[in-house]
Length: 125
Image (spheres, rainbow, N blue to C red):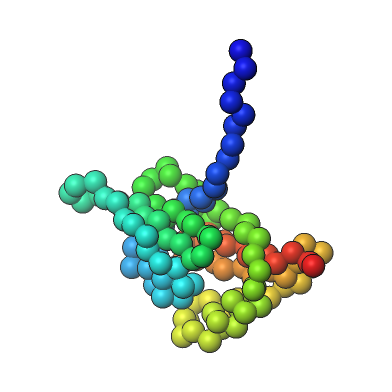
């Protein structure tokens, strides 16, 4: 039997969060993401939400078992130096990331309040 070839359309990392206010402060206030949607089951339930900035989409979850705290998402990007300048100019007292240049490219690593890392890399030209 001949089947249709598999096509993958998008990858969306899921990061575990433990405090919605701290997540919003970091992802929206500091990193410049937009909240696309939030979902909660009725009653007192954890949040599951999507944030995005340009083509980068993340799911943030308070649900136990959805993701492991301290995960890393490797993201290839352009404009990493400009993003670094933008973030450095913000008044956020919990993170002052540097830039690292290596054989893989120019890297800006953002560590959220829950130990998750966004490793933003601009590959060499």
